[in-house]
Length: 156
Image (tube, rainbow, N blue to C red; front, side, top):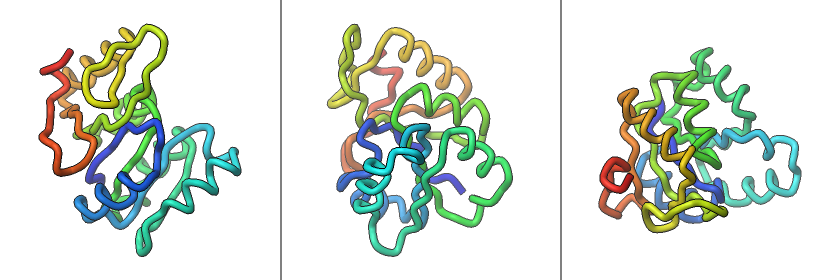
């Protein structure tokens, strides 16, 4: 069962590993990213941030979609972390059971605008967010679980 899908350009770090995982009661973290599975430095760094007692799975976006669709992840309280809004949309498009997306960290890029603390979006990403909301997905901005949820529709 998917508890939450989070967009965070840092992927797994202290804030995600501890406050979010504990708050959600997650027993498995899925890092869905096309670079990390083949990037040994990033993979090692992420493994070091894994909280004790929580399973960590690192897969490409396509392999993550295949795992979700196969049902192999259903036995877990799954917390999915992706690096970008585009990756979150790819997962949500392929796996409609994703109902909530948290925007936690989207770094500033040339041409992006800030829509929340540590959340910066390009025009094309705004379109993706609007499409996900139109598809019935709750998209919210929160750094940590104790922050007030801000619906993305309030800031777009």
